[in-house]
Amino acid sequence: MAAAGARVAAPTSVIGPLQAWAENELRDLPWRRTRDPWHILVSEVMLQQTQVSRVVDRYHEFLERFPTAQSCAIAPSSSVIELWAGLGYNRRAVNLWRAAGQVVARHDGVLPSDLASLLALPGIGPYTARAIQVFAYEHDIAVVDTNVGRLLARWTATTLTAKQAQHMADELVPVGSGWQWNQGLFDFAVAVCTKRDPGCSSCPVATACRWRGNGDDPAVNSAGVSGKQSTFVGSERQVRGRIVDALRNGPVALADLSHFGRPEDSRGDMIRIVDGLVTDGLANRRHGFLMLPDER
Image (tube, rainbow, N blue to C red):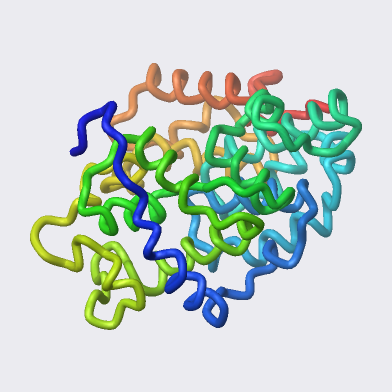
């Protein structure tokens, strides 16, 4: 890894070849056909740790029901949770609903374009905030996800810190082409410089890459590059998901919640899991039953 304070030169020689590649290779995805900030936010939240193929149909369904932040904000949170079925990470639905409420209350129903205001919204971190700035407002800044972090580390043959990766990515953005450039990076990482099979022999930017598949992969342990995710099957997250899925069909008696737990889960474990769902805005307790919240 480069020293934490050291500046790593941006590999500017990749710009021309990558732009040429992106001219004909960008995927046609529904959220790329709009600059509506609310639609971009919905897509970005759905895409967090979720495959594109799973999101496309759900994106259309969600926006048919909630085409604006206002329409989402005035709906009960339970309706957003119900529509989130199958996408996982249900807290995202609650945060999206809460963000819609704040957009309406503080920004007249239109997502702000400045970083500080975006970061003040529930569930929006630096990545999502920058994505809105780029894909809705076409700012010339970089959006660094795990795929882009992998490209930067390999192109420079350097294990990077988060600050180095973001600074380098921002330097590479061609003036006036922030939207196209960032989409090109995403698709290049998915189609060519993949995690397990980089395709170096046919890579259109190979001459500008310092790694080229030689030696240990510098992307491993580089900032922004995700490692192996924890196992979902048998996890507490799976138990939470089972309970929320059941609540989508109606209230569940608190006495019956043990059916959704793991063999090793004690009564105390289930109480703690339920407490977490209530705290996260995913459920309410009432008269011996657990149900989806009815907040408005």
